[in-house]
Image (cartoon, rainbow, N blue to C red):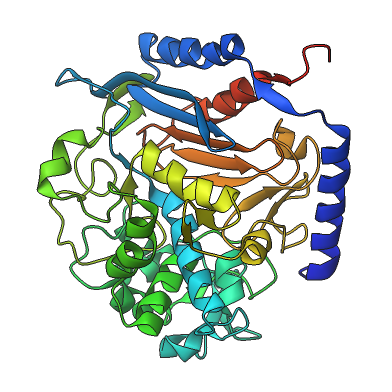
Length: 422
């Protein structure tokens, strides 16, 4: 079962306070930070990645920015810092913030049942292995908004053998790229999610962390609560206020030349990915109908860093307030006990969290939150050190390279005491 919220939040806050009191103020050492540039160039030179953009802020100031390799290797188009990337599941953070805007306005509640806006979720079911292959049983309780935000609704991407044939028949799971892809769909996202509600899920609500369509459902709910399509809600409530000028579900034609190419590993070599749902996608040529809150956006490192800096600053960027500091804190603490990880990591309302020093084997500070995307983009926010990290690459599937972990490690080795005597 999920641990009590008050206990989990209190322990994390206490730990963060103790660590902050014992840790000297840290600054970036430019000579050490240059190791990121060296590592990225080596990845490109060895043919392990085609290209990447890296961006690091500390206390709102750019302390590192780099563009490496190729945006399109075959065309000879170099990577630039304003390159546009498919950010896949990094969309989830934006959708989660959008939902919390509605919570703050009293239009949505964390305990509200999903069925209030999607009637097909009124009597959900769960698939279980059985002697005959599969048994479908009723869910023991309704799925709530909180379940969606914490990925504890039991809803997967429908690609496991237990449910894949059922999802395939409904245009989901294996019929949607790797499960999460809807940019080629000619129906609005709410039609897809209404159909999802008729399918069995893979765990009982509240009993497991299951990564899947949760945030796509949330995007549909935002549409129905606000009366706006998700692209319009994002544009008016987030992108325009935050100056995120290059973040879209589908790219305007005049920005197509800045979209980075997707690559994949095949037979031990990096090759250009195919067109279609498992490769380049439909972000330029698609129907422009399905606005998927789980994995639908494209963006730049600069735009996404502005969004993260808003969160790092307690919900405000410049003169624009998006959320209250209280809401940001709630979103970025562990709310699922050990359901996400027994190794010092947790999950809040849309974000992975670091719960103890060394959690998950990471050097990141207690209280750090973040996530990533299927095309090997990633991000994190470390409030203790004032850091915002953004890494953008385009590889699907990822292959054997741990570029995300290396980027984080090289960032933290560049942090040294602000007092040279320490």
